[in-house]
Length: 426
Ligand SMILES: Nc1ncnc2c1ncn2[C@@H]1O[C@H](COP(=O)(O)OP(=O)(O)OP(=O)(O)O)[C@@H](O)[C@H]1O
Ligand SMILES: [Mg+2]
Image 1: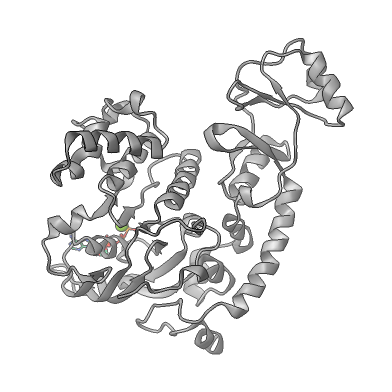
Image 2 (image 1 turned 90 degrees about the vertical axis):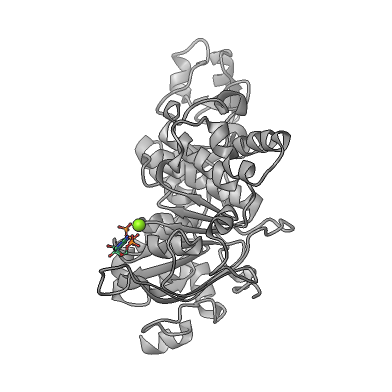
């Protein structure tokens, strides 16, 4: 089987590869797959045919009990299908050894699912060791992966899971799943157990990692906003894993297939579209940066001469610490050297939705944007976000009319085979 959906038609917002980034993921196809649990009258998953394009992120959403987890776990056969076939790349893996299959598919659950009696390094090393990698190679891979998920290997290698925060455990879970460089990553509500701010960071990190690794990633979530943010494609399920709609986030927001999907999206579809745009896609405003501990009067004079109302105080590594106004500067002699805990900071990969949240909380009407290593890169303000919403709306309208037919691969139940048919129906 070749890659299903044309990569250039999908996911402009989320994980579109930089030109030349190699897709290491493989396509997955569920072919007429059914799961009947013993003692259950109706199947948990009923004849699903689902094509998951290589190197893309597909989100499975739907109400509790609709069969998301069952569908996901049948991909690596943690749950064996009652009927149907599972195809990975070109290979029918329905009947191969299940353990072998699972070593080729990374799996991440809530809170990372780490083994508590093993260190971070031992957790990550599990599959590579099973695959018989040399100690040297395993060690090198552990450091590489900890770097990838933004944990300093020197600091974290030998810790036990209980010595980590929820977000850190989740990062290690992702590192472990990627350890043997599998083409596919399955994630079941991976960010369900962490606080909203950590969740936002982990989501952004996952997108960054995906830009580097280009795996095929299937993620189950309850959270439609998360689906919009992370997905190249979203599958909306109802009971029995019936596909109600399978399409890009843009199109699902713009043209929900029916009332069920509409209800599922909930109110504020317009605002949700903000989750499709990222901070690094809009033009940021300049700011004056001054070093921590420097002379406040000097900083103030400079800001005045360059007609700025604020300065950004940064540490030695360029990370923002404070954002005093001219007035605040007038009351200081030296610039602060410690982090202002209420500083509105947002990562360059965050969505405009997240940026807006940060601004609203800070009441500054703007936020400081940070890039690699947390270094300050510019200022984003509410006007910029508003302009982006307008622009996105226009672009979405244009795209919706000429989007390619055939990206909606849901073939079950009452689902029209193409957006064109759907438009006629509705
Ligand atoms: N081991 C099992 N034995 C019998 N029935 C099961 C089993 N596991 C799941 N089910 C049933 O299958 C259906 C689908 O369950 P599944 O866990 O896939 O749902 P889900 O969409 O992941 O739900 P949630 O969002 O609550 O996690 C449910 O009705 C559930 O009760
Ligand atoms: Mg579940």
